[in-house]
Length: 337
Image (cartoon, rainbow, N blue to C red; front, side, top):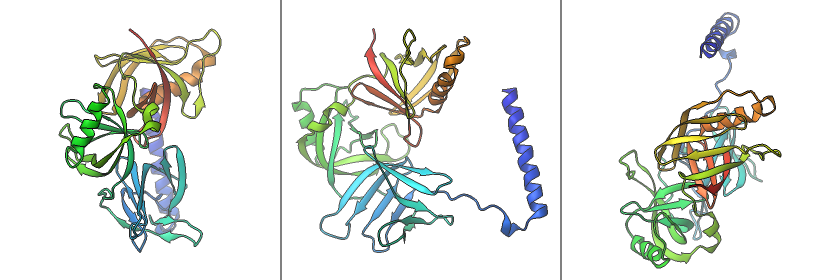
């Protein structure tokens, strides 16, 4: 900790000295321009036909043809890449980069006819257009939830309109909580009070139930977070597999809020905090064995665990993610007693 403090202090001193040098040797007009910052909100083309709603939780909605008879609305996660001005939209694994931010914080839409400046509104109300959605639905007491694999999030379900039909569909499948049923609905998102009494959050509002979503079944959560032995298969973009005679990267969470595992050389243990699909690990303590050949991957693994803020389970896969939805670690489940 002392070393870190010294580094920060030195960095601060260098920044101050650099700032003094800039003030003395340059005019204010020559000072470095602040990097652009992408703000959540609603961005639309001047004719209002195309709209992007960038929600603060890094979920987006994209509406096209909204002024016509056949509007289309898609959803996914948005990410801003600092230093490039690029805005990446991730839609069920597909990456789109049609948006870019200029130095004056204007969001531009690129296309064959050239770039178009989008109009900005700080309102982030969802697009009220019903569209087909495949979700994994589960109801338990008065807490109905729909897991949406396109955004890897659980959304509360508004208990109105076609909700009784959705609940009846779930009963007919014969499933019991915490099992979920893959179902296709027509609906849209709304903002409403969070079930835990926190800030308003996105809810799914169902207009009609179309039936089973067969293609989604394998992606519905099928394994509990605690009480499962999780073995890492990917660390960021890198595939990880133990060499012959070595142990895999592990993570285990129990129902008492305790975490433990193996990081490639050392074992670790500590606490974890889970609220809905939010997850924070630590502080974690580890043994202190030296393994030079495994030190790099162990450091990356501990860094990923420290940066984890959310999780999602699809089938027997666990994804640990940061606030923006970047996948930090991917695990495969193996049941333990």
